[in-house]
Image (cartoon, rainbow, N blue to C red; front, side):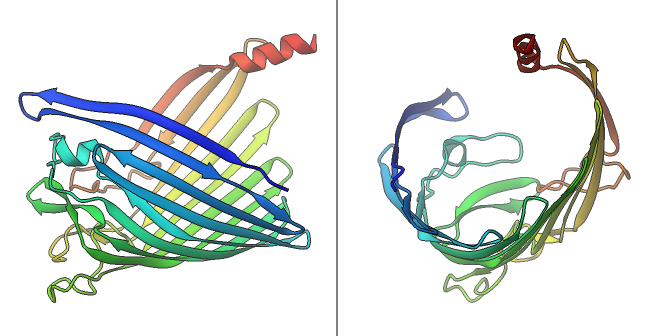
Length: 302
């Protein structure tokens, strides 16, 4: 009825250079969680204590899963999160990125609720989520081709997600859509209730794949709506959609040798990355992969 899990992670990161100066900090993470089974109900309490240098915080979480028969599952989660600024956000100057050593840790309260319906052959999931941030850390384009992380004070991110997966013989299909709304909740009337930078409202990912004999082929689609690049909403990036296609052939079963071919940006769509640089056009890749695990498996069968 119980499945207890615990872990400890210890590390250290440092940086020393003429541009960045000398910096270092100790990293420590302690985690404990449990899964309590009560009939069709699973309760999952968890607690993480995390430290980075002199910044420490707790991330408690409580989750629950309820099985309603074989085809319906309800899921819910609630908790708090703590995220210290990363080493790169604090000190690293690279390309368009500027560091901000004055950043404070980011904390948040969150909750989500979802329902999943279906079997392995056809399954759909719908969920809603809400997060209230304190000192949210986000990059913002503050000058031409210069982006810097800032604490945004209070901010809300909320919305809904929908997923669909289906399989029929050798063919599989999956799709995921996210409606993500955001609002700045700081007191400054210039920014109050405005959307957060780099938070597009709409995201879509879909994948179709077919496997037959030694051949597998797939098509991926990624799309997202326009997004602002600063809190003033004076600059934005347009929405974009991109398709990729790939083919993989098992050339030699005994050696576990695969030949891969992939076309990125199939329709040669033009676009920009998060900081205004042009994204690559249509690109073709060819590769070989040697799967030693399949070779060992074939030998064991003999």
